[in-house]
Picture 1 (tube, one colour):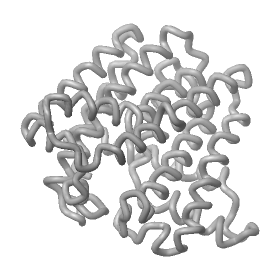
Picture 2 (tube, rainbow, N blue to C red; picture 1 turned 135 degrees about the horizontal axis):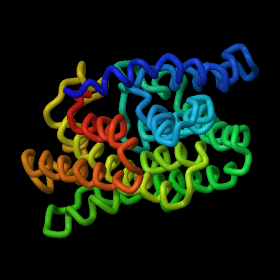
Picture 3 (cartoon, one colour; picture 1 turned 90 degrees about the vertical axis):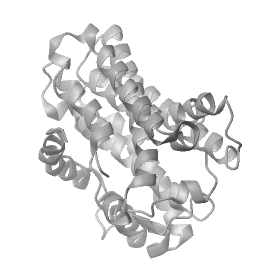
Length: 296
């Protein structure tokens, strides 16, 4: 295991302090809604996407604080997606990060609304970013990543693929699904860090390419862990994708084939960093490797 897990642990307290600052308190009316939002946001998790925003900004020698708003924004939007993903009409999961899912605690209607509120708060938060001239670009980046041509579109393709037979096109279909469902938000996280730091278009494009490959590697590793991990390790029910007839990289490529595909995406991610110089080939390369070496 790379030491990047320790890097994430070191950033997590600051990211959670920022998240606490940008969210309404649990005592703010309507209290039950804000309780559900905070329950979901502060229910654990690695804060990988938020850390990626900060680390990408630091490639350009930016202070961490310039990444505060976009880092929180991606974490809020990511949490919204998890709440909705767990709903009975989607994956119908009872556990998330080792705790009952939001709809199990607060009911489906309030969980749905908590997710909606986190999405809108995340996008609105970008208007408060320190680099005012980058606000429009940031909103466009995150909005596209989260929307119908990004994460939401990928979720639709994932639902439509349930029960699909495994054939020679399966890998292509999987890539199309997860370029949206998983990779789009990780791609945006990397790009937002560059935008927050005032990076130029070519540098931001390199970060997008890097993030896209990291996102695919992360998803392939998730599919492997779903087959090999335990509920205690994963914090959620393992094997559900297989039980629901979902198209996964393990189903399409086999366990060893999926592991190889994940390593190849990591190599492509690291190669994408070359235009950024040696300064990018430290923590960002470690993050890419961590995506496939993690155990949860």
